[in-house]
Image (tube, rainbow, N blue to C red; front, side, top):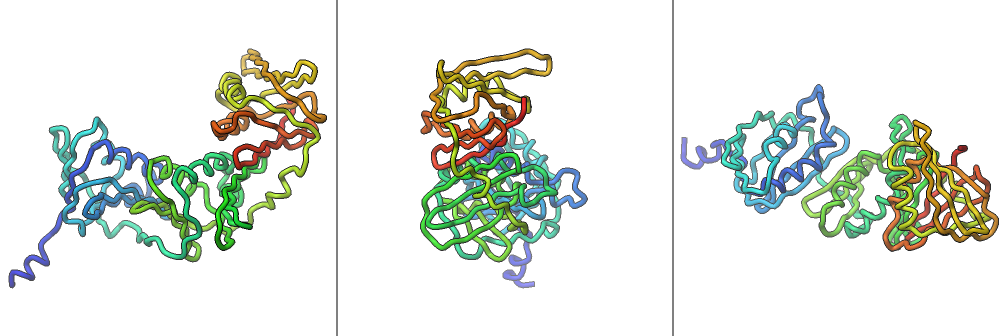
Length: 370
C-alpha cells in the first residue's frame, strides 16, 4: 500500500478546544428538542462537527432541526461525532474552563471523560438551509415579535392550525399572529418585500425563541418547498410548514370599543405579579369612574382574597367590571415592552373580547365570568 493511500484510509477524530461553559449553554438550548427514551437512539443524541473556528452541534426530533455553534479551535473539522446529549451535558457542567475534545474523549477540570458514541450514519439526514430569503431581521427585533405573540399559541397538537404561528408579509409589513381560540396576539414591523405567508409549528417557534435569546446579528427566514430555516451565521432552526388553515384573525380583532381604561404599565405589571403569580385562577377588575380607579381582586384555592387598587383613566362607556384568566393576564403583561408607559384596554360588554394595543402589537383576550 502506498503512503498516500495509507493516509487517506487513516481514521480521523474530531478534535477541538473550547470553553466548557459555552458548550454547556449551547447544549442546554438543544436539550428540549431531543427525544427522551426514544426507540431511535440517534434522536437522543447531538451530532458534533466543526468549522475551523466553531464546533457545530446539531439535534433533531426527526421534524425540527436545531444547529448551534460554539467558538472553538477545531482540527480534523471533516470528522463528526454522535454523542447522547444528556451525557455530554453532564460532562460540560461547571465553571468556565478550557475543554479539549478528541474523538470520544473529553479533558476538562483535571478529569478525563470517555463518552459512549453512536454510529454517525444513524443520525437523520439534515438538509442545509436553502431557498429564497423571505425576511431579514435583527435578533432583538425577532425576539420582541415572538415575545409579544408566542404565548397565544395553543399547546394542543391535535389542532395544528392553533398550535402554530402565522408569519406573513402584507402591504409592507411583517405580521406575526397566534391564537389558541381564547386569546389572540398580533405583532407587526415595517418590512418591504414580496408578500408571503407561512404557518410555523409551536416547537419550531420555541426553538427560534431560544436561538434569538442569545446575542447575535441578523436572522434570515428561508423557505424551500414545505421546509423553513431561521438562519444566523452557522446557527439555524429548521421546521416544516404546517399544512393547515389559520383562522381569519382580522375578524377576531374588535373594530371599535365602547369604552377605554388606561393604566400605568409598571403598576399593572406589579399588581399582576402579586395577584396572579401562578395558576389559572380568575382576576376580577372593578372600575370606578368617579374615583378614577381600577380595583383588581383575586381569590386563591383557600378562599384567601387579595386586592389592589390602581389609578385609572376611563373614557367612553366601559362596563363597571370584568374578569380575566390569571395566566392570560400574566402572560399578556409580560409581553409588554418597557417602552409602553401606559396601557389602554378597549372594552365593550363585560363578556365581550378585550382589546389592547401596545408597541406595534395587538392583544385580544376573552373575559371570564367570575
